[in-house]
Image (cartoon, rainbow, N blue to C red; front, side, top):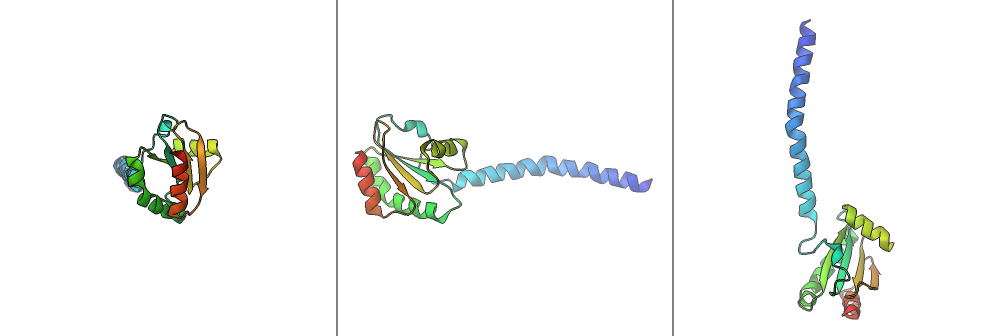
Length: 141
């Protein structure tokens, strides 16, 4: 009998740890996911077609191509933001990002450039030279 009492007391201790540990782990993982998102980019894809040209990066934090594309895009952002271009991210780890990618038939490491009316002016796949991206954004202005 002493074995069954010992086993039941251990079982009672485990759920107590899980009740605290699992929510803490979930909060930490969500915080890490938010931290890993690109900085300075909006995620409100409803901004497309609202009068401002938009550059949308379909982004998956797991791939090197996305990081390289983002680094190139970051070198160009400031002057274009001053000219009214909005930079957005369609994050593949969010429902909205996946829905956007599916609706446009694209995957991660894709740049889509929209004019102010919401018409896709250019779609660029994978790594791109800064001049190619500049040319695509200039077409939307």
